[in-house]
View 1: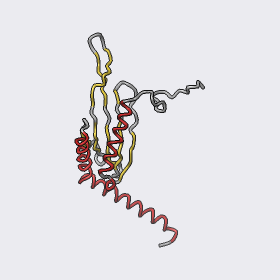
View 2: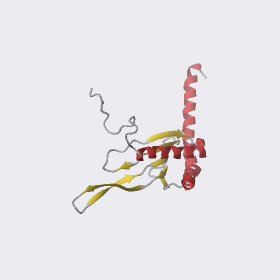
View 3: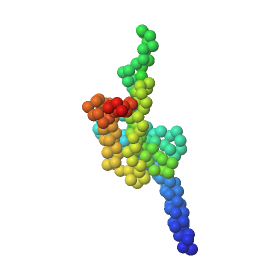
View 4: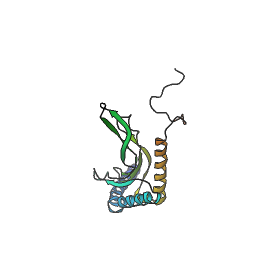
Length: 175
């Protein structure tokens, strides 16, 4: 091969490897990984006795997700419609998401709690992106622990931690 094509040839080979990995990762998700993630998360929530459930979401082929959800509930907040009627605000209690990416890798996200009609939802937090073979029990436990830490911080929000501001970031010096 002509030396002028050596670098280009390497890049083409790398591209072909990446495409083959995407197909391999997607197949592994379908045949075993999706079910292994769901089973592992169910075992964890049973062992630690957390009120949660696991569901597989399949709205788009090859972009499926396994979700550990804390569910939905009345938030305790309600809009007064008149003296006899009120509309409850619903609270999404948060979720830990394992979702396929376009390339077959798995992104792990924390979806924060959110109360409808009360501010804007917080952007999901990305924990990491993994190849299927990288996911092991220790990672799942660590992810659930990190998820619970984030949920606890959200639920226990107060002004004891001034670095965590909500709302408009206003300069306290006035300039």
